[in-house]
Image (cartoon, rainbow, N blue to C red; front, top):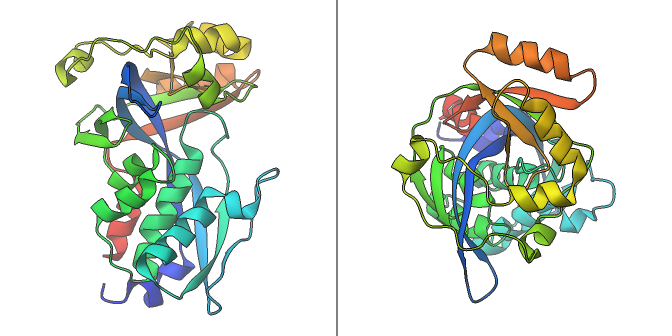
Amino acid sequence: MANFGIDVGWSEKWPAPAKLNLMLRIVGRRADGYHLLQTVFQFVDFCDWLSFKSVDDGQVLLETPIPGVLPQQDLTVRAANLLKEFTGTTQGVVISIEKNLPMGGGLGGGSSDAATTLVVLNKLWQTNLSKCQLMELGLSLGADVPIFIHGTAAWAEGVGERLTDIELPERWFVIIKPDCHVDTKEIFLDKELTRDSKPIIIADFTAGQIGNDCLVVVKKRYEPVRIALAELSKYANARLTGTGACVFAEFSSEVEARNVYNLLSRDWQVYIAKANNKSPLYSKLEQFL
């Protein structure tokens, strides 16, 4: 499509999908304090939805502010302003977010919103940055933003920005959001956190090494996470995504997943989602290109 922005893009809703960390190892620490990780990212079809409205005055505005978060601190606003500053475009936008992904859940909601903002506005504003350039911009907003711009399931190293595509089974997940908000910074500062795990290779992961080095600390600090893990473990191998708070288990069929979802939904905030190796954002973009 030669004129993506003018033709259809402004009238669409754009997905910002959740991610799951299927494994997380902390293998070291940089001099600046950032932790060196090995992790595996996979997307699911559980999404926030973003809309963009063009304005002529060059402003970046948020129509749906999150309570307690100043609009100028919102990652979508910061992403749009970063793209404006980097490219020199004088265009403006009003951003609207249909927020479904829980905050502080380890599903990457804010990072995914920022990535969708960068990717879609790069099309709508016709600023024509490469995916690599967008990922570099995204990294300055947060370590998880590049994977959402990358758009395919990946083995990740470094602080999470060195990505290698990985083909994974696209199974069904049941995800519980315990009634707590895990502070990622607090977890990474904990003295008891394992920071010297031996690096593994992709073959080790596919052979079953799927542990999360944050699990012990999170369970100790957050009783709701510990209880959720125990509850979900009655039905399958329950795991923590990122630093949590969300816990998840995978199932080979929608029927199995839905049965467990129905049992848990009476007492928990719970979601059912299908794994996607390709981000739903890029699946939608392909319909217009």
